[in-house]
Image (tube, rainbow, N blue to C red):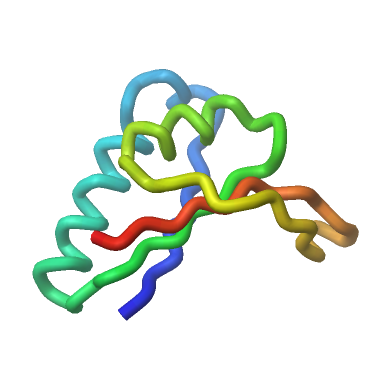
Length: 83
């Protein structure tokens, strides 16, 4: 099935590889234990740190979308990959 990956880290933990390591482990678990076949990941436009994490996951950029979140509309970059 399809999964959607999201994450948040406190500022003190940025740039240490935690988001990448945890994301890869979670994806592997979801494939092995829950039959994950497709992964969707998004980041806010301009969030280069999240883009860096997503780039390391090997997913493919699809398009930008406008979503309602955080009390307004925000533009996100959408990535999808078969796993």
